[in-house]
Image (cartoon, rainbow, N blue to C red):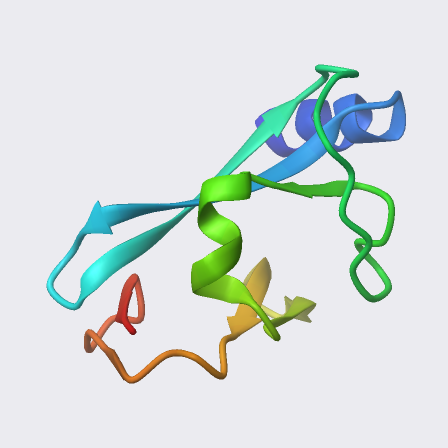
Length: 98
């Protein structure tokens, strides 16, 4: 039910937010969220998340050149980041190093 509500929020002008914070076993973690703040700076990414993703300006230096893909698999769907600046990651993929 929460996923349906989140998708409804995005369809009604909400935004997927992406930030980076220190932590995890590799040094940094991606932080995903939802926002409906109209003052957030828009960043265009490739389909299917074009015009719905906004990035924390402090996170931009860690994700420059990254590709973000919406993956839909049998077990569920998720957003995948391919980050060319990444030099290491933890075994579960939740954190990364630069």
